[in-house]
Amino acid sequence: MLQRTGLSETTPKLQDQLLFVLSLSARKSHRIERICAHWTLAGEISGVAVELHCDLSCFLAFQREDRPGEIRSLSHDTPRCFHAKRPRVEPVSNKRFVASLCRFWFALRSMKSLTERLWFEIPHRRGYVNITDKVAALVRRSGVKEGLCLVNAMHISASVFINDNEEGLLHDFDVWLERLAPHAPITQYRHNLTGEDNADAHLKRQVMGREVVIAITNGELDFGPWEQIFYGEFDGRRRKAVLVKIIGE
Figure 1: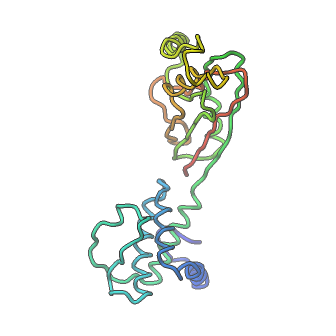
Figure 2: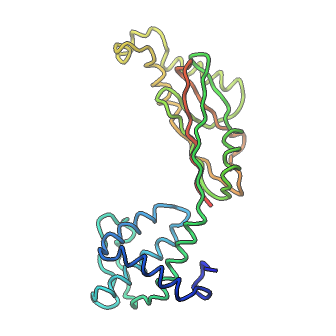
Figure 3: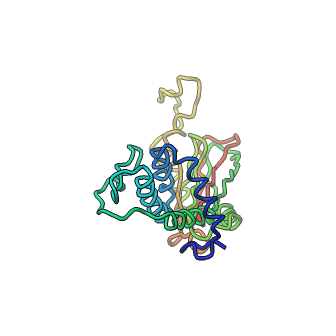
């Protein structure tokens, strides 16, 4: 059984297989560097990815017979943090390199994700729906214990936002938005010259926002006091979607 901490229980055959897979891509080392730089963008595994990237740079430099013990300059696609000056290091052995690759592989395997769409059809022009329970149910279904949850409206006249679940506040939002961008008269908006009548809905969505991101801690949405997730509709009477994307481990 492979362990994240090393290769103490790996077989030589498995080590050879991992090195063989790597060698198929190592013919163009700059491609490997770009791939590793991309991997570091996944926050939950960034620590492992940074270690693997450094090992890759040393390993490939050793294989290319570059100057011993130095990390060659990386590609332009590499994040700026990798361009910092580094001390000299010893060439990486195959065993250490495969150990780092194994740890990275296990980190990838521990990542989970779930993508779902929630559908709404508000019978009035404007409306507000508390969708907290629906999103929380998806988090539990995903099995993610530590991660992030993105919730965003998939239409340019609707919004997703977080605030207090209090009827008076929701009424205040609606009155305030209608003062900022009143629906009538529709002739006051140049957008409505296209034949539509929803220019105000676009402006209201711009104010209330497109999406929210909530931390997942111990398998639950990690809210502050009184926080709830709302879907805001500003041009209703048609079916619209909200995207929920959950990622973590």
